[in-house]
Length: 395
Ligand code: AMP
Image (cartoon, rainbow, N blue to C red; front, side, top):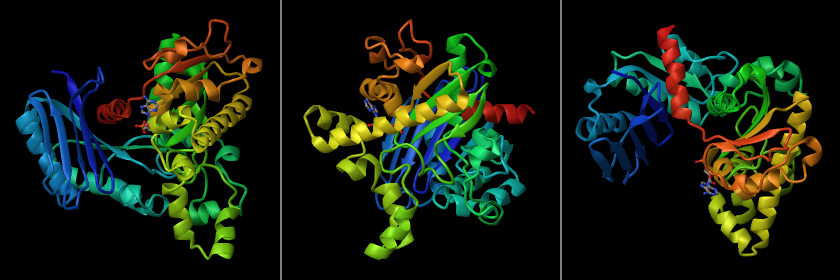
């Protein structure tokens, strides 16, 4: 029987799950419970015996996982019929403590709890997912896989900010980076596609989804990444501003009496593409741009320009670049964004082939003459979590 890992990604009002074949990455079943704690929740489950959808209220994460277990029984596969070797939990913030996935025990729960101030929205939800899953599935080993862990290889001059030295010790202020699971998966897969070991390649990975981040990866190790203390820094995102002058907080406090919490909220939830156009869905933005909408054009240009700046910066960081890899919703699907972000970079040996660039599946999209290969690699964070959880369980 093939080995499976139940991958759980608990958000503040959602629980996403996937039963993953750790060898092939295929999902035997997937599901999502949304709007937990609200009047009308939404549960979908896709299993081998059919699809299930339900809008009845789900009061808590515990009830959500109970509903998922019932859906597995009815729509398959029954959890007892599958060789489940671990439960892999996505945990957003592992701070400086976790450079690798780790088995869940009381000490890990305490450590992740201590990190809540660094990820006040995400870590409490992730912890809730871990706690209810341990209660409901006590006989399985549980493993925490951290979004920050892959970037723990950054050197101090890349992860430190130029702020008072003791802010790191006192407040944990440094660059941690996120999307590590995706960057790890995509860089390994890109190496396979290029027929080389990840430890022989220098890569720039561009994860462009609702959240966006770039990573400079030298011989398999992340040496710089665009997200920082929180996922707010770096590229322009669906609703997040990315880089901006840190003086903006103080300025808005002075001229508009706006609280730090409100500015924080706006920069995270009302900025980025949404702030510029009212729209955070890249497909809609693309449609509006094509129809001649000025704001959509500006947002698109700003978004792609920011990516290009990071490509240039990470090119310099790495010295030589073997490949640039696009992934996540926009990275995988938007030929326009890829072409614009890498336009006019022939001088750096980067040339996107306009025909190959229409691809939305895995493959090389650069010209044969391009010194730096450009690839599209769909990410698969669930599979990466499954593989990492399995590696921990096997020791
Ligand atoms: P993700 O967070 O990886 O699910 O990516 C979500 C983003 O990808 C959203 O902004 C979507 O609009 C965008 N996206 C998904 N499909 C496409 C597509 N075919 N073309 C352009 N953007 C897309």
